[in-house]
Image (cartoon, rainbow, N blue to C red; front, side):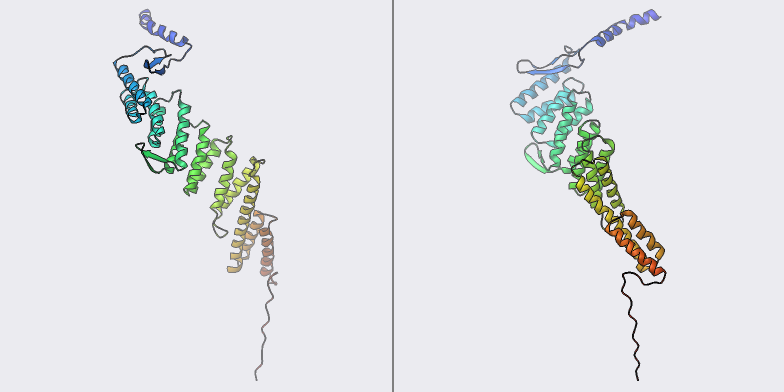
Length: 349
């Protein structure tokens, strides 16, 4: 039984052994010339063809000739037929690549991006993967910068910054380990900032510093995160969650990147945020001191103001107010308050 099985498998085993010993790639290359048209070279199956391959190559040749005569619409039509009707042929990836290039040439940014996305989605092992990611990045950047996609390659449409942001997200998913990924996240943050979508911008920067801590963009991401949180601060009478976040990112930035050119700006931002925290504590203490006569609560908040930013002007103010609380609690004259004038009594006869 075993010898019969071996005899049946022998041809397949021989072919597998030969292919495993081949020094070159099994994938074929497509070569174009005016004399011969498109032809397959260099692969293990370069000479293999059939009726379907013949139809595909005829369309490819027509498309390339139209392309050279600048009949781009006709060329795109031929290439798209190859990609649609013969998706398993060796010509399909090349067809989609050329569709993307021609769409990009005509400033049809959305259609160009879609063609490139189909290419790397269907044929992820394409040797042009990095090149295509670069082209997608260029399209997303152009849209984010306000360039208009052309309809039918003739008339400019509306700007598509939101589409640019979405395309950057697609690129991050396509190539999460490439150098383009942190660049895309920084651009996503920039796009959301342009659209006044601060929370979304913060999310993109947060993803950048957590996913790509060694990126050259990390210092800028930390600094921008601190600035964005600071921009959400509404004043000492409001919730200080954003203030605390800004303090954290300013401090992290100054510790992690002590030689960065933005160190001075970060120090100033940190000073402003710490003062804001201290002043907010003073305002809470004032409320309990002057409005509620709650000396215990007032002490707590004034002490927190001192702890939030020692040796600052708000801390000195808090110390003065603490002395006033202690005096008031003991029924003594309050330091800094004018003494109350005694009422004069008049006798009338």
